[in-house]
Length: 448
Image (cartoon, rainbow, N blue to C red):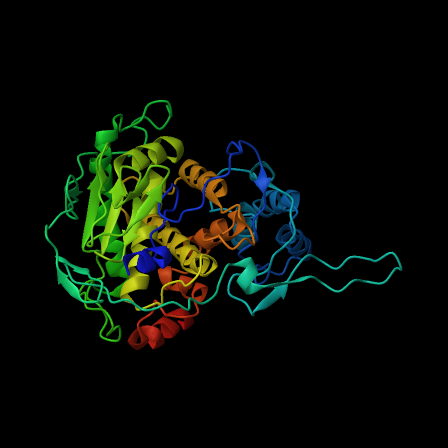
């Protein structure tokens, strides 16, 4: 039973390796423009200036030069704020205020549609055929563009703290409060860093705030209180909504955030999930970044955190924590688990969307140094580019493509303040992350 759970479980990673995670491409991360992802904002309602509207439409349709021209032309008058923002974000392809030209960030590419539209969306502009006739526009199914869909596997209950799900699907007491050789992280620790979590001197990116792998525990415990505040913001409290009656857990919190020190490799037991690498099976390791539905824990491996911090900065860790917490929400909400690797793609994309919502929340509310500064977001973008699943269309593909993962993050990041992670709802069609009692509240908030 453990294998069937773990094989379909949401044990995945945002910016690293892990159970079922796609192997990163062997190519070096790009240092220049990368293929443009789909726009996430329509070129409508920006204003009434015809010349700027034309540039906005061209920007939406994939001309990065038009995006830059729109920004430069519109910024001559501060009243053109909507046009300025549209050009600055390259039609929603990057976060606002990055300071990066659209032509410097992206190669030209066609428009791909809108994030929450009908099941088919308009593709590139119509083109003339050899006979002089206009070819019909290409349509791309939403399930392909965004990586949405349903899971057809079983629903497993989320167990309370100090219990695990046994072979008969019963929640029974664990043999130990904390898995051997690991550390349970504190959710309310005081952060000893007063300043930037990545570079103490923002003008010197060669010097990092944290300089040893063992310091990743401190870094994570600096982030967790903000993650806690974000989840309360999303759901009003940490109590499991009464509508999610299938959950035996009482909290939206994972049962533990587990820190796995360097060199630790836990043996598989009846109380754990199963991971596998070239060395064989294991329960957790220094490379873990995963949510385990058997014991309800989120595992964070020191070596993987250290690698991600050095490669992509502290924003990577904010993203990984919220991605895995998104999987916890999916489990508690009673989403069916995946029956095939391909069915795992929608919940993975939804978890990436959760990450975007968390970084947006943190940018607006955190008392710590904001993780979503332009350089962090660009690093995070490169990280997502590097771990998009390359097995496109294969039976073994279990994560979103490069385009899907970047788009999912920005669906969450660019969501309205009143939506947050609830903007990620449409990714998984076989279960809702919005408690029914709060659906009307969401609609009312959006309409106001």
